[in-house]
Length: 428
Ligand code: F3S
Image (cartoon, rainbow, N blue to C red; front, side, top):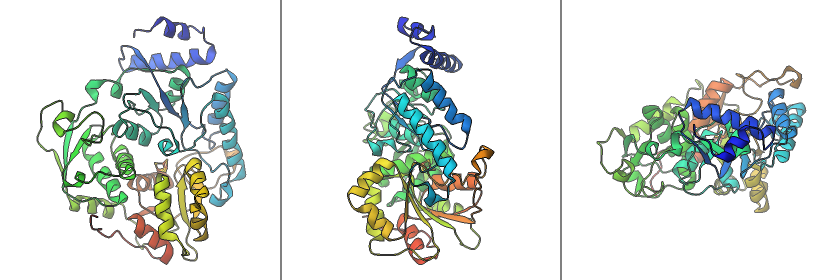
């Protein structure tokens, strides 16, 4: 791999041990993927330092002790605990304190301690053609597909890229990989955000790590940012999708032919109402429709979604014994609080949780936390949710059943205490 004189100097330790370590890791990554050179990056969404693993937090502290600093604007991914209101999730205080230690390390590194999977709702908004890195697949696909930035699905290397300000040029950083591979005609009419999530879940499974290009009547109405966020999160979950193309939305593509480099291939996937309904049915597997938790806010809710929840829950009380979690970033929570939205939601009995989500918090049964943390995940029968992504991970990581439905139906479930399945809404 060709390195510039400055990059060679970084690799030889001229800019200190942290930058040297970061460059060494990135060079190895680049060689493994056949990158010809590095590119300067303009933004990074990095690993939080996960409190369930003491070593993980210590690693972030070690980097800060080595003098590492973020070379580019950096936001921080979701964490293992709500760092302020941890008690409302039943998290052990030791876990929250450890997550706060990770936050201190992130501050020393110069990262914006956003602790969210939707940093764009918290002000991190890379522009078209910005090379970037992200540890979170939801962020990668949103930034690639809606903002036109250039990102791979990264792991811990995102931290190294943020410290070095460089990334090896391969994958979605190259023009030739930013082309459609599957033409997807959507004849269904997704009209609420959970329908876009179901659409993404269905298509992700079909295309694997391909690049779906969407068309059809569903796109005669411009999807909202929340719809696009839900679509991308689900595509990145059931498949390995990092980029989808909606002509007219995804820069720079204005037509379906553009997205395929000028030629129009035949339609490879057709998605009708039957396929959307199939996903709702598949992600409802609680035998008796009994549930322990209703969850909204996957990916972490935007301000618009918080407003929507408040409209649905104003002057109402959730049913006795029902737990309703709304997860969002601390930044959006602050905006919603100042707008009077949080008090409306809390008056209904909902819990507003920041920094984490059901599958990222201590509920996960498939992780082995440090025994000193005294974490004991609760046994849940099922979770009601409006996100296909969350449904997959609740099954895999909390190992309980799911009841996937629309947002308004999930709210009705919380208010009545009885599961309300998805209704087919009319397009407005
Ligand atoms: Fe975010 Fe958790 Fe969903 S990390 S995308 S709220 S599963």
